[in-house]
Length: 441
Image 1: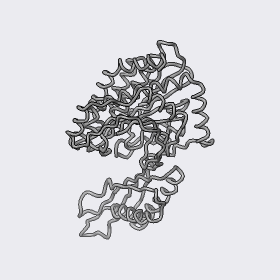
Image 2: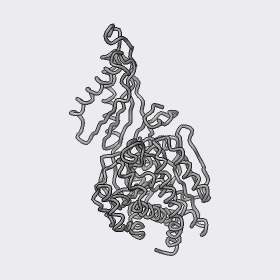
Image 3: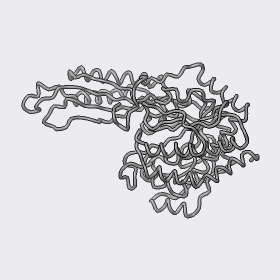
């Protein structure tokens, strides 16, 4: 490392104990999507304590914020998430950080803090922004923040995710729509006068059956998932209200919009067949993530400067005590270019500004995703080592973007090529409030 990067790495090391404490506290809070009041407040307070200003909050997006340090250009962003998952707490009971977001938000925040300390000490021009992003697990937070202009004006943005391996990513995922369908019918006695009733539950079931037949006639990469959220209160009462929640995934925004339109026809047909009224809500519209090769290479180079987490025999024994293999990835993989089957709302940010993502090993290979075993490992020493690597790597890459004009120019050129002049369309209605966990706004 050159002297500047050594200084930034030194700031990261001095902040390590504080960042680990924050990660443990957020794990204890284990707050579900859009309910992350304590987690958001903890990270905001940390940023303010270290000289950041809370520049913006969002009335329609609970627990979202933008914090800033410095002034002028370039403007570099860091994405922080902090929501938990249901049924991922200890032994699978209650909410828990079954995706490691207690580490994710903390790592991004303390990377930005470490970078800001160097900028202040050395008088380096430019601005650092931290985006407090709630509700990634319901694929909502960044979709609504992007709709409301949170990421406008950024020159580039960095993100990371804890995982079972360590690598920079230049890959993608799937685009996705999150949709709810409500049906409104008419109640009646199910035995005495069912002919007077109009069952909203029947409408949901007919819709779901129609969508299941639709599966044969969509491209093989398409995924459609649903859950019945409301379906009546008693079997002897014709249900006047029912609701089903859909995720529609495809390779890109165009394909998802096409399939969602066909799903909507199934809903309309179900309402017609049951003489009920139907209402659709678009809860979120997620894009496929755009890669950025110059930015991914910069992230990879800094990751190799920092080095992967170094795990001990004790770290491996802890994983084995949970019934896992105990294998913890200690190397650095090549830059990933794979297209995953999952979706993330960070993809929407990649259509507004250049974005790249880092994964750092924080738990054992073979750990199931969205599972309480991630929550259990997420506060262990091994996870904290991964957190430290992520914070340093992000901070060093942020420094490169602020000081290396050629890198920033190449990054922006790649972004312009990928977007090809397309204007980002948030799709979600302008004044719609972000949904809280599984509640309708």
